Amino acid sequence: MHEPLTVAAYRRVARPAPLRQAVHDALVELIINGSLMPGQHLVESELAEHLGVSRQPVREALQHLHTDGWVDLRPAHGAFVHTPTAEEAEELLTVRSLLEAHSAELAAVNATPADVERLWELQGEGVQALASDAVTRLVEANAALHAFITALAANSVLSQLISTVDRRVRWYYTPIAKPRGEDAWTEHAQVIEAIAQGAADEAGELMRKHADRTTGVYRALRQED
Image 1 (cartoon, one colour):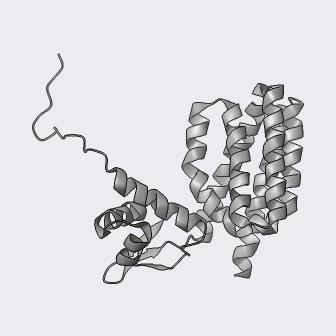
Image 2 (spheres, one colour):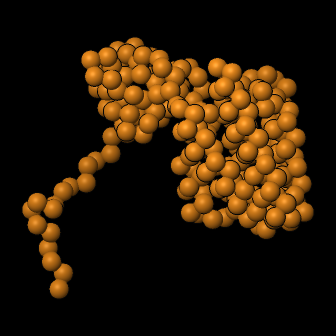
């Protein structure tokens, strides 16, 4: 027989706070694109003025950003943009390599000629972004291509896992988007060719090497810094 919830166990679902979430998402994007740099002090009043909101949703958003690992809260000092450690980056990028390699394998099995045509369109947009020398546009083009390959995998669990790490991957990728430059988009073209041929194993291996090279460039940049 089903037992009713006790008073102690009963808890109403909190209503969503869209403004707080909007502020949260806006601050994440500012961190990803480098407008807010690692280690930067985050002043509630300045952020509120910049975003055109009151300080309350900013304060709430900072608490959630701290929970999510984007912000460090230091007692008596305030909030600061988190500075990712080398270990954090290595762990995330390693997981990304595994997930996206499998994604490319599945994409090679599922892709239609129309899908392949779209992949080449996204590749062309990335090459144009590379020529424009605009880092934000380049990062967005890279994310769009990888996201479409993930969509072609048609695996909802894989998609959810990749989306979980996507924003932080973009954060790590932004400083190396230009150093990776032409090499990255040459590697993308190789992955697309394998997908077009339905060569699942080759597509997966090429994507794994692509992700590992990105990790290597990030590691080298960290060492230089």
